[in-house]
Length: 81
Picture: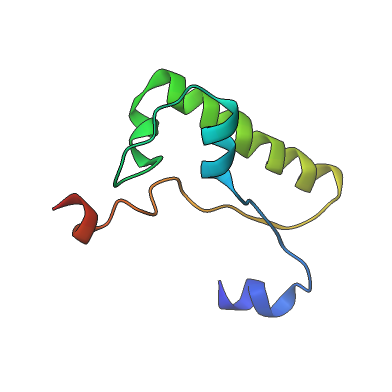
């Protein structure tokens, strides 16, 4: 990761995934884990896939490197215990 960041002046990154889910889908967000549980629901997987695919398409069309984070970033020990 360090080399990728060092060797690339621009890297496209996804942003505001949770806000997009909150505003444009009927996905229910978990109070603590937010969008992490959506990976286990068919409707949630489709909504996430659609949003992430838009970023992938932008990167591909602009021949741009892309960095995507997982929707499970809030699923950590302190939130799940």
